[in-house]
Length: 472
Image 1: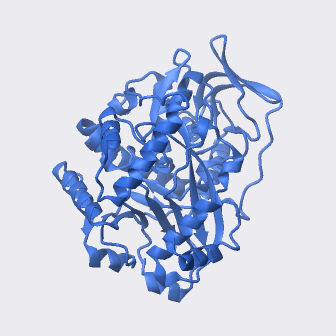
Image 2 (image 1 turned 60 degrees about the vertical axis):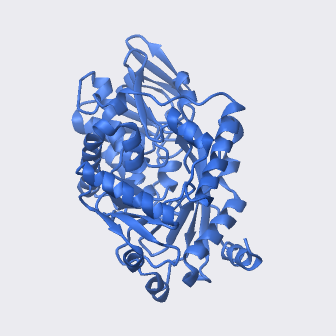
Image 3 (image 1 turned 30 degrees about the vertical axis):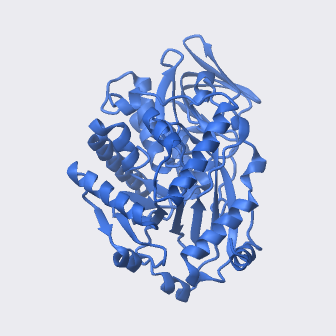
């Protein structure tokens, strides 16, 4: 980084608050009381992020008489669900390319289910009056290197061969810059309908309210400590009480699962983001962006960026930090060296915005698995269902995961439960120090590929053959 660029980047961060922008909202609801007794219910949902909230809501929609309890260790939406970029994608497979590589024979079905799932999210936002700035504006994957443009063209051609290119538009250099003006953009692939932008914290808070209105008993600051059989059902102990339930859903994702054998299937990865101050009219004019799409570049170490309702730019990604031992620790939520890198990259992308300052800088852990998209299953004789491993694309896919978990608990064969994606598991991560060394080597190799025209070295090619990898 040149000294002048470093000074510009550092100065832009001088007033940035070290908290997630979305969670610093005067409309944030008050925390609900903790559980302080023994509760009985038909269904206990552990986790108050999107996974748990959607499950509780859909359980009541399927059967209003079902007695549902949800417990959350802190407050609903406080973790990844409330601090993410707000990209709500139809993709259930962490993008078309990942789905094509892993489940080509059922990709058309997965894409259709994903579209229906996103439509259902949009309908729920309207039906429950959830004020989360939902905009079905789509997303552009942009190329910043020539080899990336070739890859995007190949992706478009593959989608067209499968009859899945409806709503996709391949953009050349002039066309993409007419949408969003950056001197670094060489082209792009615009998915016009498959992604919505939203305020992630407000979505979580709206789902929490909707659950309560349907009769779900929600207890916050109530961590599930352990899970055990109890007669014909299950018992979950909490700090001040316990819950006895016929069935349990685990929506804890990045946090250690109460089913211990699942813990080797996911690792935490720390992701970081910046938010600018609101742009002026002239600043907005200098970059265009009138259609308000989400954007992501096509590098292995990629950035994601979008406009907020008040015309700030959220700029995140690139660094994906895996802590040795896979521990989730609050002190890792802040990483100034990553903020400096992100700020420098921001001004390289948008040099016309020199002088813009960042108001917020934050980070936190998300869960990932070796196939980059969620996996599902049951435990304790079918009394417990789980979903995890969303790898940063859970804003939309968690609703699908909620449906899968409820299907699995019902014991019924459905279109969802017959999917190979649902019936299969990713490969688990190896123990330390092998996991740390392997992830570190993979990250280094991905950076080398970005710098060398996308050419993947022997390590990456081996990981590809094994169905393993690591994504920023």
